[in-house]
Amino acid sequence: MLKRTPRSGWQFLGSGSESVAEHVFRVAVIAFVLARMEDGVDADHVVRLALMHDLPEARTGDLNYVNQKYVTADEERAAADMTAGLPFADELRELLAEYRAETTAESVVAHDADQLEMLLELKDQIDKGTSGASDWTPFVLRRLRTESAKTLARRILDSDSASWWFDRGSDWWVRGGKG
Image 1 (cartoon, one colour):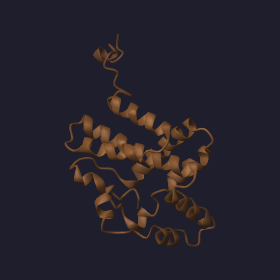
Image 2 (image 1 turned 180 degrees about the horizontal axis):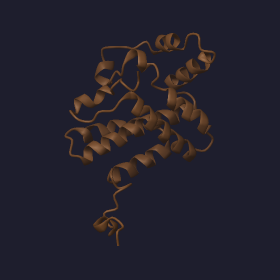
Image 3 (image 1 turned 90 degrees about the vertical axis):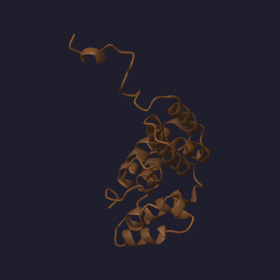
């Protein structure tokens, strides 16, 4: 279901489309990196939190910030229903509760990874000229709690979203490595 559930916030920008599953994958990768940058956190636990953080949205859908002003999803009930009968149901429900509570170092890092994923998508939209995308970035930045995430956020905003693959200063792009 998460593969078919759209992230609903992008409709306000009129651009971008991302499923919850795509979002979760990127959050998990970012969580792995961010956890490696933070001292004293269990990186494997952070990745587990990141992988499961939006699992209830398979039942509730993705409620963006405007939706959340008027609607409250019962994520705890959704998690209980979807894990009922699983031999590891308690573990999944505990991961989701820990993520929602944001009281452990690991859950804080996982939340920062979630926000950095949004920032990466916003930066891509900004670089494509999407009106309004830059209005969202100050709020994302204010949600970050770890210094590592804040450092990565600055690097994201200071770079071009295509720079990881497109080296504009290289002659390789003239002939594609054909001499």
